Length: 226
Ligand code: CA
Image (tube, rainbow, N blue to C red; front, side, top):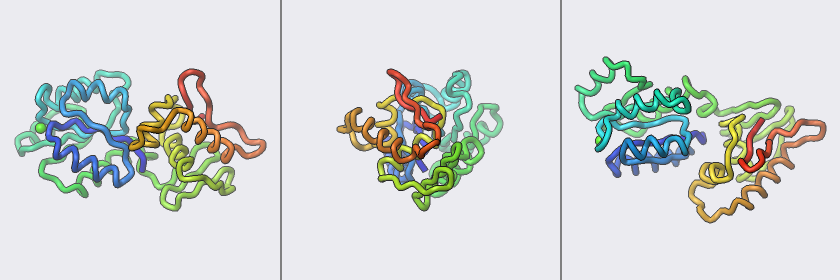
């Protein structure tokens, strides 16, 4: 999985625990400790799912949620609310708040992961699927194999991650910074030149003779799978 998950939660220890475990599962994770920063960061990060704490120092989770639903670019973002008390559960159930699911603290990571997968399976199936297809391209996340027009293609590990990233988010245009953040999440020393080199290698590998170009260069913006 290489879906992106954003966490808004004011307890650093909870963020650390969730982030560490989600990254081990292959997710790309970013976070904020309050609603105001969270709303700004979300737009830049463009996650596939949001984990949202109910009690935040500035806004309540419900207010953050309402703001998200008003925003055209975020209004379909799946949200799982993290709550502390039984009373909050009742409120969430009773509210038409636009929350997709909720989880009461304390929860186990496995329970959280199961909820995340269930919500993503409904909202954004390609993020949790083992096999992704686009046009005549097929990628198997478990077996780490790629096929174009039913012919197997050998890719290096970086090119595989790049292709997986593009396939999870086809047709969206990504800047080099966004690609860097998603495909090399822990490496701040990667230069944009390096990204271009890997994109070129990926193109050379997947562009079979007589087949159309799948990765488009968008002048001054970045790249896109089309
Ligand atoms: Ca809290």
